[in-house]
Length: 275
Image 1: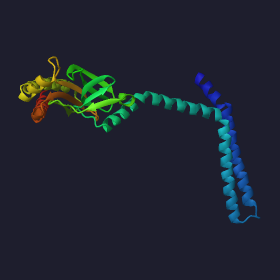
Image 2: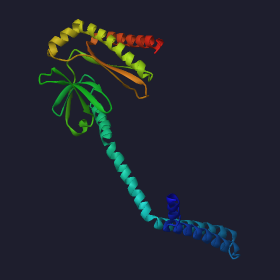
Image 3: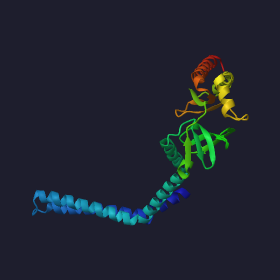
Image 4: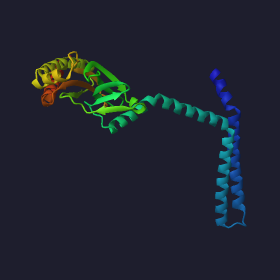
């Protein structure tokens, strides 16, 4: 009953009644003028068509003008609502927009993985650069790793001065990604096995003479070089394993090859096993 009363109230509201009267007046007026023009024998067919078109356009304009005047308060409220929604969207996406713009500025400064970034009194070597954030391995005053990793939103590149320099270390950070279909139960098993394979590769990296020499010459004793592996989602909704590992340049190909071979072997073996 309440809904029926509401419908009756809407149907009998002043705005709807006036709108109906305006439309009815427009239809009647158009019919009357058209009939007057058609029955006026003093006008040629060309003038009748011309005056008929002009009368039609005039009636449409007056009808729209009358409707706008009638619904002006509602239209103003609707416009304010749209403005409020637009402002809310801009505020909600402000940080994302700033981060994306900061990523463009960072890219224009040719910042790459391995470069040293000094911003807001925070100094570190870039280990991962994305559209929204930059991850750096913090360096102390002697340019030695502290073992901490700091995630910087790219928006800081817009609001702060920053300095970059090319890394002078003989080691390079590798960021390797592997993608698989979205099977979370299988992904957890793959991550576990891939972690074991990563540890084996890491042992071979540490045994490399080039790695040992670079570490002893350039880094502090408490520097953290442990590789990391993260399970996340890719842009196409697939699962991605992101591996970060430090190695000597001459070991890069072996590291990438061993990790790739291990990943595909693990996925192939686990896919054949029943869950």
